[in-house]
Image (cartoon, rainbow, N blue to C red; front, side, top):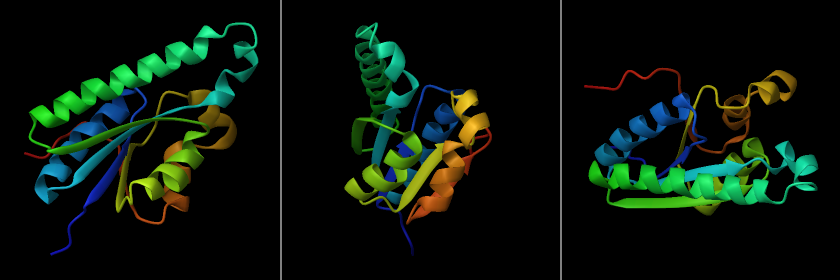
Length: 149
C-alpha cells in the first residue's frame, strides 16, 4: 500500500489554507506521516515599505510563528505525532515546492486553491498553480471546506 511519509502544508492565514490544514491532519493520521507546516513571508510585498518601517518584518514573523504554533497544537490534539513548523522568507511559489519540499523530503504538498494575495494572483498567477507545475511530488489543491466523514 502506498503511504505518504512527509506531508508539507502551506498556510498563510486564509480560509482556504485552513481547509488545507484540516484535510492534511486527516491524511497525516491515516498515513502516520510527518506533518510539516510552512508559512512563507513574501518579502517582495513589503520590501519598499520596509525602508520606512522596520517593524513590518517583525510583525509578519511573529504572525507566522503564532499561526504555526496554533496549527501545531491543533494537529497534535487531533492525534498527529510528528509535526514540524517552518517560517520561511521569499516568494511562496518558489520557496514551497523547491526549497522546503526538498528540505523535508515531501512526498505530498497540500495547499489551498487561493490564498490571501489577490493582487499577486492577478499579476503573476497563483501560488497553487505554480506549485502544481514545479513540484517533484504529488500536490493536493484544496478547494472546499468539506471534510471527509
